[in-house]
Image 1 (cartoon, one colour):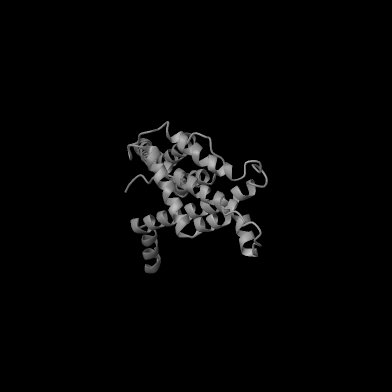
Image 2 (cartoon, rainbow, N blue to C red):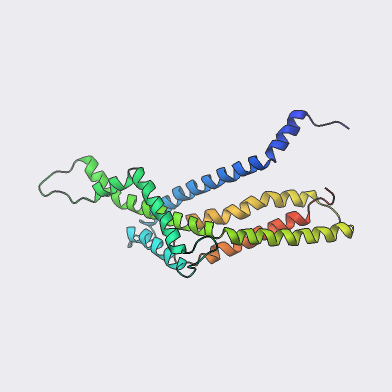
Length: 242
């Protein structure tokens, strides 16, 4: 029986190492956050002309208020004593990031009223036109960071879902092992590939959702259940003998 090349074995071990998995997790989360901010901003800009053109900037401002209002129903968490203040601090961080990027300064300049009798140059007119869109973008960032804080506060729920799925799957694995059930590495590896999308798809969808006014529990519970089912399937189909 031929042995696999040494370089292939080292590459497989590197791909499966905890450090590599952690780095891929951090990188994937960063890409999801940046992508959600970009997509959410574009959707909001399009919506200002298509879906909520009567509301304009007020739509993005209302989303921030509605998401904070829903958090008031879940005032305490395992990770913080005041969920509203915690999420508001994350929204302030988004505002500071916009200020550091110079966006707030552009909004202030574009919001200044035109001087009577003075002729505005092309840059001033462009800033005046862009100010509402830049304001909406800042509100989208604030709302995304509030929802990111909600996802962070939901981590204990995901940890509990993972634990329940693991216990259930290991129990079914022992039943299969001692009853002579068949082993399927095909199902295991496909379930392993589905674990990351089951966890991140809902996270990405929730951050980019263009409307507020829905309970965050409905954004957390379905994907907690999906993650628990995936972990249970992985543990149940894991190889019989280590």
